[in-house]
Amino acid sequence: MSAPTVTQPKCPPAPDEASLVLGPFVDIRSRSKWRFRLALLGPAFVVAVAYVDPGNVATNVEAGARTGYMLVWVVVLANIMAMLVQYLSAKLGLATGKNLPEQCRELAPRWLSRLLWAQAELVAMATDLAEFAGAALGLSLLFAMPIPLAGVVTALVSFAVLACQRKGCRPFEIAVAALLLLVAGGFAYDLLAVGHQSAADAAAGMAPRLDGKTTGLLAAAIVGATVMPHAVYLHSALTQRRVRTSDPRNRRLLLRFLRIDCALGFTIAGAVNLGMLCLSAALFRGRAWGDLDAVTAAHADLGRTVGGGASLAFAVALLASGLSSSSVGTCAGQVVMQGFLRRRIPLFARRLLTMAPALLVLSLGFPVTTTLVLSQVVLAFGIPFVLLPVVLLTRRRDLMGPLVNRTTTTVAGALVCALVVCLNAYLIVTMARGG
Image: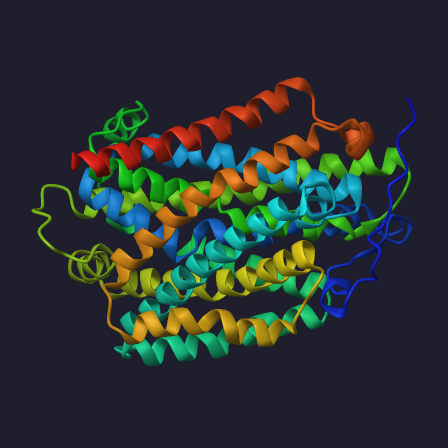
């Protein structure tokens, strides 16, 4: 069966979309072997930044402080699920030349498409809240800056990261990947500095179990912070026109590098998340929890027990995670609006609009870590609305052609969706019972 002809979107790429294009495959293939291979990597590293954002920091640190190593299995499982979902999203963009919101708009009934857009915007608001709150907290820890002022500074710096996208996709990818490595380096340094880790306890944490409302809430927050809906929308947009080719053999080669890209980017992100939880579990071992703010307490404990360098690395990593993920989140929001509604506003104008609710929450003085955790629970309830479409679309041969899912891949995607729904249901039941 011959592959179906892939039609391009009816409207030409806008300037912000065009900046995500790397070029024709033949031009990239003419480069040296290593430059060619490196050129095909990048989108997954941009998306992986969303997996180590301040929401992840808060949920992992609080989970380690409250439950020790009990939720290690949730971190590992959430990262595996996210890797599969992101691979499917990226493959959809590569195979069809359209991103996930565009496909939903064209193939779903109008009412369903609008419903998906509305929930995507609500999820984007929760994402922005986490990213700005976390970066602001990082600035506050570094310079004793008031949280509202730190939020404004965060907004200004995020504009500078977004400006890299105007220079083309590679400068933007490199800038965001550098921030990802800075986050990874900061938490790796702290983990090594703390030192007293229990391999046996961490291994015991791989046994799946939940223990009532608190663990259910934290598990949902970890999954929401990892399998982030807006990141799934974005990944399909990053691959849809990045490298232009109609040759099926070239597309299969691109798909192979796409797998490598996902494996590298999300393995780094998963290791960082696991390191956050283990760091917190070691710091708070044997301590009475009380009403401590987990992130602030972790920063203070690092300074007191390890030294100023460790607390500095923690604050810098938190700040870098907020700055990088806020820029990525803005790009995702643009993809959502353009795809579902065929409308767009300038990238910087959208940044101004989406930061407003976050700055308002910061100015009202709500507890930052609690706000971060709750925002990630909101994301967990938005996951099925993006998982189901991406699984259903990538199983369609008329859309995907030779890159269509294998049956095992579709089944795995359906299981991921079912697991998230079950976790959300467990949280609702335990909250209703007050358990």
